[in-house]
Image (cartoon, rainbow, N blue to C red; front, side, top):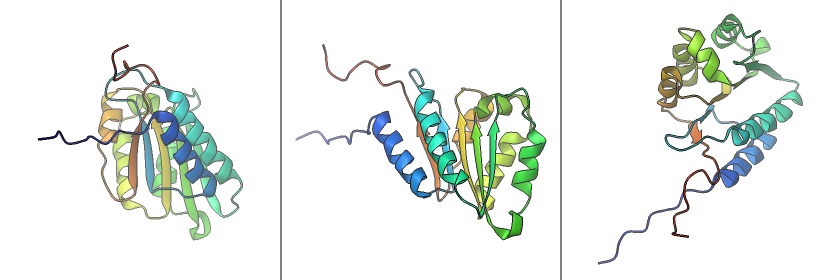
Length: 167
């Protein structure tokens, strides 16, 4: 008997390049959640590159309502996010939420995780990219969202885990 072959998951750089290419073409999923790995050290650079590619594309679109938020900023206000999620697009157009460093806002604001989850599952005109690097309870709950068009990517440090072979 032979052992079943496991499919090897692509390295973080390959996944990052694929998502960046999609973002640069405007091929946005309903939601892309960029989270910390379940084990090992996290590399936030990959998620930041994907967010930057998306921002670059979104800023060139005239018919897109764009909200860019930094959850780690001292100026962050959850009310702005609640208003954006709860409203319809201006003139019925497409909407995009780019939410970086969300883990800090999720830890401070009660109800934010539930609002993001509801928006992921309900709004058809809203697309969102959320980067939550921490391992807070709310960030872990956000990673549990499942549905059509909702993707979860976890970026580990490139060589944070030992290689699969013995040196």
